[in-house]
Image (tube, rainbow, N blue to C red):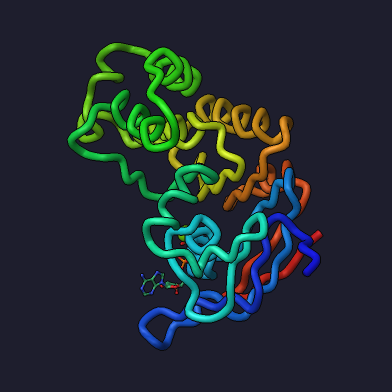
Length: 223
Ligand SMILES: Nc1ncnc2c1ncn2[C@@H]1O[C@H](COP(=O)(O)OP(=O)(O)OP(=O)(O)O)[C@@H](O)[C@H]1O
Ligand SMILES: [Mg+2]
């Protein structure tokens, strides 16, 4: 069988509680190195789509194929391994591990991916403006919302993931830190990584090479 498309969804649907069609029969093809911006109203299914492609949740119907692998047929252990190796996730909520410091939250992502390199972790945290000893050694509850988001971004970028899945990555950030994060995403894009980015900001959406609009669980290409 000929394989086209780096990421494909086939008749992908996700129904919550047997009644909410958060995604409704979505067929997408995303090529390696694409930057796909996803826009759409609140509640339209954007996070649900990222959860499917980011291997965090399974479809109700249909499939997700990444690099020839039908990910929804993997078992939980295989799925976790696939995600750690291939995908960097920036969530709308932070999901940092509460009992680990900022630095340890980044180190553990390296540990699960390959091997721990504290110097590199500190460098990547510095790039997102987390550079004081106090910030590095604080647990998430003692960081501001924007600082937590930046730690998450460092954690997502530390392993230079082939696929970056980002749900409103600049949503909680001021203009300066938002720009820093967008610059990091551009750097990944320029060296050929695949980016899926949800945003409500059209100026950010336009920086990608493809814009998808989601309305009521259906995807429309809007460019
Ligand atoms: N775990 C869940 N259980 C039940 N319904 C859910 C669940 N998660 C999402 N939904 C519903 O599915 C629909 C799509 O939600 P989703 O989170 O994908 O929207 P979104 O486009 O990301 O919105 P926002 O811009 O507000 O983040 C919404 O109607 C939401 O209420
Ligand atoms: Mg969302």
